Image 1 (tube, rainbow, N blue to C red):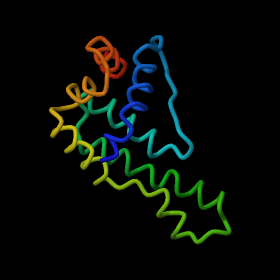
Image 2: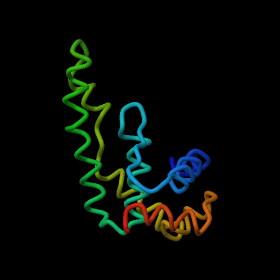
Image 3: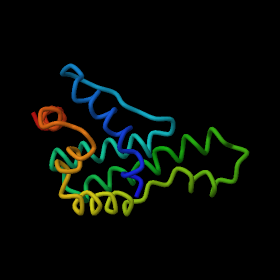
Image 4: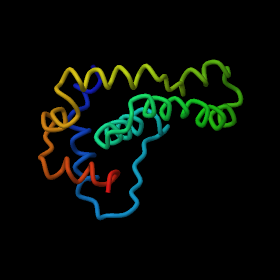
Length: 128
């Protein structure tokens, strides 16, 4: 499972977010869907956002990224471009099922090395 392979990186990013001053915060990766999508989905899960809303939000990235990437890679096969930026809802549901099997989001975050204060700070970024 991908979440097992990226535990140190997830821990480091989430610790930075937890330690950041209050106010707007930007996090991103190259395409803005895989690593960024994972961090966003974890944060939204911690904030008790409905799974269907998290999955729909992630899937919307397909269209948002697709247009820009089709423009950027005009000489590439459009189907290949769109497949590379596809953000399937089932990916989020699979991640949520994994988290549930790990004991839930808080348990998982503890397993990867976040303490209770850091978890509370992450949740507060979206809940307060």
